[in-house]
Length: 85
Image (cartoon, rainbow, N blue to C red):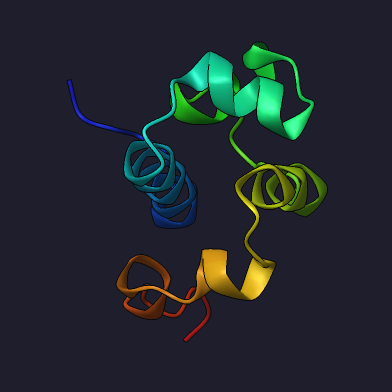
């Protein structure tokens, strides 16, 4: 089954997966650290949230002790194609 989400949503998902893996966290541990319900993170990872809010991403970043700049400054986002041509 292919992932039908937009490239941006896939990039957000992949970045969260990479960061919680690098920090040796589970989804529940990341949620607890960030002060979010686990369902908020699961909705992003499993595709229920098609347009994750920047505020939610910021809270996840706070839980990981990184900035939004650090979250978005990676190949996953740097290599996204321009949406409007």
